[in-house]
Amino acid sequence: MILVIGGTGHFGRETVEALAAAGEPVRVLSRNPERAGLPDGVEVVRGDLADPGTLAPALAGADRMLMVLPYGADASALLAAAREAGLRKIVFLSSGAVVDGAEPQPDVIAAYHADVERAVAATGIEHTFLRLFFPAVNSLSFAMQMGGGNDVIRAPYADAASAPVHERDVADAAVRVLTTDGHAGRTYALTGSESLTQAEQVHILGETLGRPLVFDELPDAPVREQMAQFMDADFVNALFDLLAGTVGKPAEITETLEQLIGRAPRTYAQWAADHTADFPAA
Image 1 (cartoon, rainbow, N blue to C red):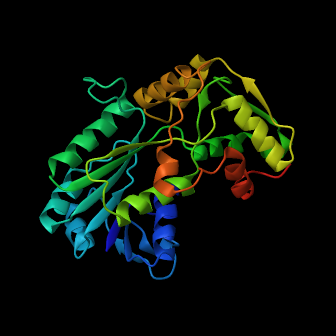
Image 2 (cartoon, rainbow, N blue to C red):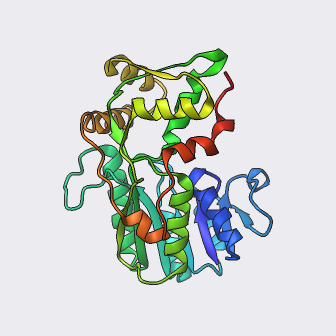
């Protein structure tokens, strides 16, 4: 049995669906099982990371676990319960912001994920870390600006470059690690196969949607200030600093994802085509 933590979000859901399609027994921890909307055959159990009493029942009979955690979530009770339950393998979806050997880590995003990685390793359970930097689903934020026929995407850092990764490719990598041997103690940096600036991503998205989308670059300071009103300011600053650090620099591309899934990663254009329904019509 494979327990998935975060199985109703983008990456967890794709992994659950891929595991179910492969005939693997899979269970999902959810605060609201009745709203999970997962495939038939997937076991959904009520539980919460903040309620330790719900974790042991969720882990009963499970031997492997995928952890997809929201930023800032406390995994200590979960890891203690996993050790007590005799779990044999943990796969953690971590962040590409982590810098091995850095102390302190460069920002709060890296520090949080590095702390979780250390906590996972300290359990003594076999583990693998999948480090993801800029997922393609970040582009869903553009949808909020595209209502009413607006074709101008306004944001900082037009020339910030990344190698965006399709969430289905992340899921395929997670399935591979969860269901095969030879990954103990490994850390895999997952990237897409092409370096694209934010402006280039918007152009590709526009071509896919049949809309003349353009990127209008904004100064970052007022946007940081605005976002900090409803998000953790340290997190916002870390995210913007990561973007700023990629301006004018082609994104590093690794072959790790292709080696794990046995094929070339999906392109950003493929991601856009798969998500046309998530963007407003012109």
